Image 1: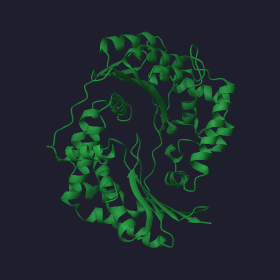
Image 2: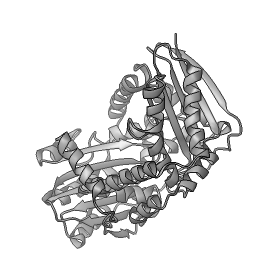
Image 3: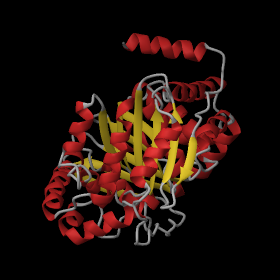
Image 4: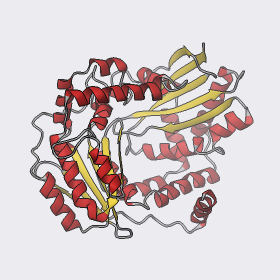
Length: 435
């Protein structure tokens, strides 16, 4: 299977360059503010449904972190016509799959089902949008589940809290300062009325986007969506978006942390613009050149050539508001932290002062072409792309226009953004040493 995928990728990269086929979609908004996006694809008899709620961890109030992720769990605890945990059972028994995820800016619920189950899935999603069972019992049970998840993912793994420590120090005022899963203290302090207020504020049609992609007729799908969602009233509470802007960082911040880790770690975070900003496209290409694969600059320098690191990677976290580009190094035993930092900074400086090679730029763009080619084969992937464009960019049309922006990135663009964003004054450094 791996050989077949590698061969397919090789053949794709050797083929003449062609622009990806546009995703044809229909977009409308109901009177209650619910946005509907549909894309017909009759290649297979399946349909993907995604409900994008425009609420993530950045929308949480101070002292109430973790609510968005907690609600992801609560949404499976039953509603007026669906018993607890029955939602997933219905999908599974139909031969489908379903899941959900919470990020900084959104919470998304999705199902991929046989096409003839589309109406039922829309009914199920409308039912829990308006009649979710937000009971004290469900709240406490799922809060315990989330707390256990935090222990498993963040608190117990040796390097599980690196991102939490980095973000807490890199951001001063913006709510990206706290990570999605929230803190134990805030989860313990939460009460049922807080949770119900969160539900009635954000889980409303005027804060949601329904994306349906697959084997259906648009007129029929729209008729069902209007039937099940059209009578749900708009939320009565004001949706207040974070209005604070993180002030420019004018001086490097350095944090030293000691804990029970097997090897030292170094993490550096640089402030970068939001997803969809003109500078985000050359930064994505730069990220690929720096850290995409074992032949990338950072991995080759620190792991292969200098043997300073066991692992070395870097990537940009592009979100609705400006976020971070961060590099992470797990040092080899006995390696010098100072030498590893110098080696990493040298690669970032070289990107700002020397043009990348034609080979590197072509490779990064070829990988982007491959992502577009393979990343839009399924109806789920296409629905994901449509939802992201609509909610994060605020413009669904970018689903078809971004490819050209990536392809237009030149060497000068990469040098310019590297100079602008990878300077030491824009950097927060976290150094973790073993106890």
